[in-house]
Amino acid sequence: MDDLLTALALLLVIEGSLYALFPTGMRRMIEQALAVPETQMRFAGLAAAVLGVGLVWLIRAA
Image 1: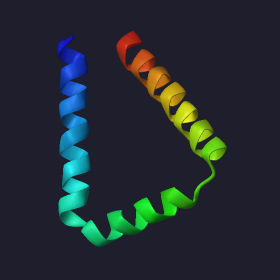
Image 2: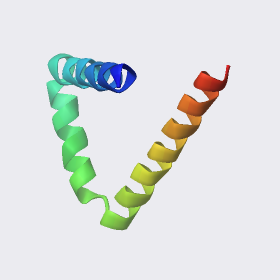
Image 3: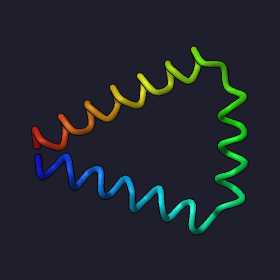
């Protein structure tokens, strides 16, 4: 459970830093994301989740 909370906290740090350092770029990225079809967004999210699970598995197996 501690690892999950640490990962979520790091996510907030990274995402918050991006918004603080590059607000205009992040706004443009959000606008571009709104133009992406839902099926493509769903596939990209699934691919990212699978990649993340694989990386966690590799890190934990070492």
